[in-house]
Image 1: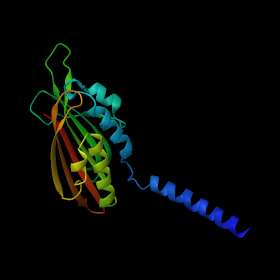
Image 2 (image 1 turned 30 degrees about the vertical axis):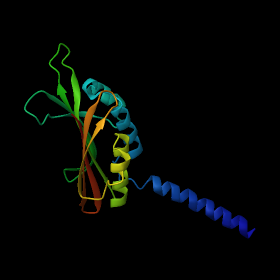
Image 3 (image 1 turned 60 degrees about the vertical axis):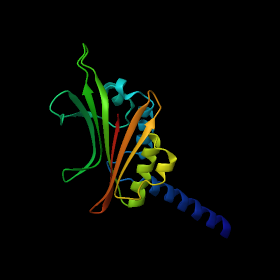
Length: 186
């Protein structure tokens, strides 16, 4: 009987522990696995042919139009997952160049992701997950999180051969850690 009670206690603790782990994400922050999966899908496509409509279809969060920050010829989409005191803690921005063709189509230029978590280890883990999804080589992946600001460049052969640029910035903001991730293709 005593071992049965111990087994029931263990099962309850395991069940509680797994639900706590899934709820550790900050309110408003998307699932990092879903972001990594979407980033992997985007990376498998030639960005010169990737339109805002296609990005909206792939991205796991709702994307809204955002005012273009450049003088002319761009379209921006973004999500506002977690904003605290006018600071984006978890959100994404997609920057597109407008093609001046008959359909006024666009092509993906840059992606910026802000992701926050309660501790540095978690935010570094999210950065590594996304960096792996976009093709950062394993030799460079091992260095993610070693410095506050990190810049990576590598040749990407998915779609057409392009140079990929990734910038990561790790910052403590009050009670949370944030990673700023900027991705571009040349």
